[in-house]
Image 1 (cartoon, helix red, strand yellow):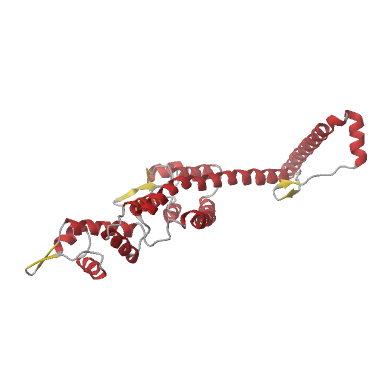
Image 2 (cartoon, helix red, strand yellow):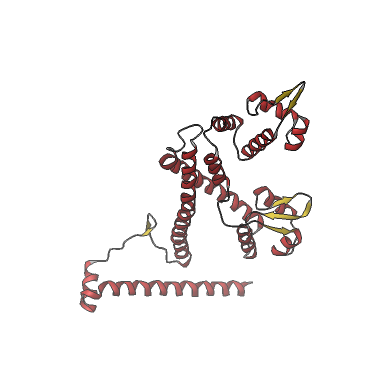
Length: 302
């Protein structure tokens, strides 16, 4: 057993516990010695792999019993690999502490680095105190750009924490939605049959991009709506919105009749639109000029 423990990386105590739970086949007995073969080593590695993927020992036992009964684990392990595999094409990178400091303006900030490690933006490399793994170079690049634009590092970290909580809620809801309407029929058995697991893995590959695409589309829509509203507010040309859409404005009948007499029925809409845009531009110019005058007055007082 000591040799098996050494080869597998598991402790003797762990191997005995697996045997007691029925996870590991009984070894061949030769006299007083137990003989462990490659099958035992392969089973230990299989158990370790499933544990790393988040399976409980009870679930692993069910899977292994299905395997031993000849039902096969190829589809199940394929499903596990599909779910636990990367959900992005982005590749991790490495960065030294010196490079990190340069990208953030040259100043050393141990507290900010520690917080980045806590958030998972950076991961320490064992045995290399001056080097970090960057799981998402894009996320780090966003932080660099925000800091370069004047956003303090604590504010960036706080925003990431808030954003992560919201995104995790979206991910949870998407999984609940797809489980209810798509995957329930594949996961009705414990463990699922090999064919059901293989089909579910294929479905994961098909649906995986949809979450990203949906979030991208909705984020773009929301950013446009709120950025427009924010800009109008600060320029003094704020519009009224209903459910994210501009509120219709009803013009007096006399005004519409006057416009129609002036430009003709077919040109009323174009005329009103042009007049509204001209008014918005005029108000914007007035606001900018007033802001400049106030700034000059403040400078003169100083």
